[in-house]
Image (cartoon, rainbow, N blue to C red):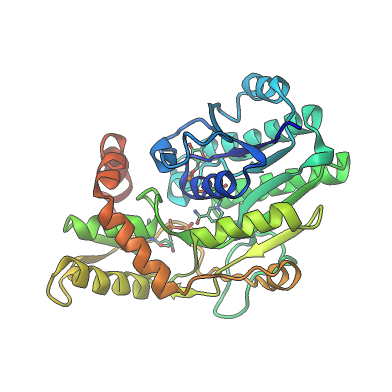
Length: 350
Ligand code: NAD
Ligand code: TYD
């Protein structure tokens, strides 16, 4: 019997590469098709260790390109889709919202249409990977549950909320089998250094200012990327049709406390005097519409599907920092070229 074909979109990105690796290695009975257009955030180097696996294939396609997407779905029987491809950075969404509408909203609908028209939906499902940012912002107390009303604030979260609604609408209207998960902030290897943790690691290493937005009091709930990938695997196979699952690390940090912790660890690892890296901390103009706090209640996923984070933050954070320090050539490569222009436009006038 031939293998079931599962498309993982955005597989060359940060989270996608961890998901692709997990599926390729754990499921030799599945044929994994990594569909990615390779934007600035996509990098096939992230998948070097699985690129020759017999159940892995890469196709370079833009999810907004209806013709190319349809051609893939008609070239063979597709059984499942795990959809991660997206424009993912809030700051970029503030300067260029249209790209977010195109990829995150239009691209998702193109995929849904192709899946509806051509896939063997009896033997797979459409899994939409989303963010807790669709719920908006929290005050000092409480956590997001699956019942929290959508209230997105940034163009990024508005586009992700819209895509979530389309996936749910295809389930209600066309009975498309689907699941959605909404996850908190991820940290780990292979994250593009526009996001807080790898950006700070890169700047500390290069003795550059550490731009902390506002007073650094905003709070994020950090989850190790491998635990997110494992949650996606669990939900893809065992989640209930039509349901949403929140995924989180139960691990809230004020940005400034996290940056201080990082500075302390980096001082030790780089053999610097205590307090040396923290001298680089620079408070800069706050992000527009900056959500104050995100925190996830993941009890549905824990109670119904038996998932829980596997790694304590200290351990995961340490491993993550080591990865960036051991892969300076990766960081150098992804920060060459267009990164300098991005950094200049985002931070020079702050
Ligand atoms: P990323 O920016 O690192 O990677 C995105 C990937 O999508 C890249 O490989 C890029 O080339 C690809 N892509 C972008 N536009 C495309 C297009 N038009 N066609 C095909 N491919 C395209 O993102 P990430 O941080 O890995 O996030 C992956 C998913 O998880 C996103 O949907 C994001 O909303 C969601 N998410 C991220 C986080 C987080 O902390 N990073 C948390 C929760 C949910
Ligand atoms: P980020 O990694 O961009 O994730 P998100 O905005 O999706 O939560 O940012 C995490 C937090 O860090 C957020 O509160 C914004 C803040 N931040 C800074 O203070 N400085 C920076 O240079 C960046 C990129 C983020």
